[in-house]
Length: 105
Image 1 (tube, rainbow, N blue to C red):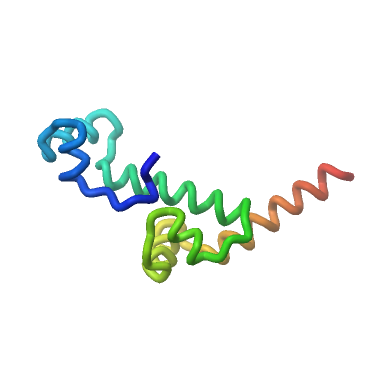
Image 2: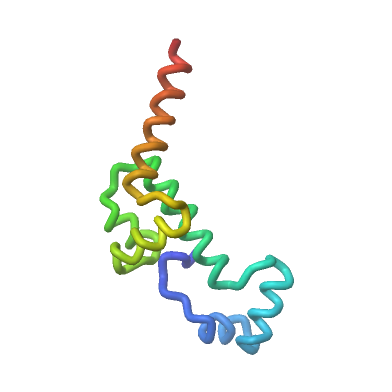
């Protein structure tokens, strides 16, 4: 629910009344990844959804996904998906458009 916010592990551990290192170990044990990786996954999934379903500017999407620096967001998105957010948007909006046209015929 708070993926847009800056989340610090120390604060998260405090909220759930656990030691930070114990929290990390238990999280990895249950989910197979670190809490930070989990958060990044959630942010990136929301970013992809915003890119496909909206015409919001990239800097607004970055902010909506918890990234205050659109340049960092662009760089991270490209590193993760091998395409820029703009390229991702264009390619996926085209495929959505193609499906809509196909469904109407």
